Length: 52
Image (tube, rainbow, N blue to C red; front, side, top):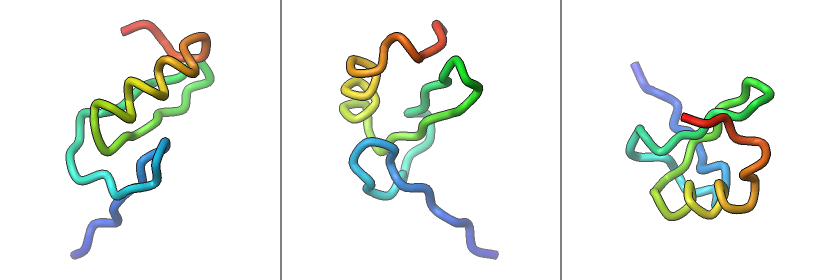
């Protein structure tokens, strides 16, 4: 059984490691390939992200 890999919601690279995710106020979840992409997305969209 093959697992479909997700693309990073910032740069588009394949998400190889889980754990780099953010939950948005609209119920969506964003997945990222690394902490850098997650941090940049967070800086640019801080008003849309749920507090952890």
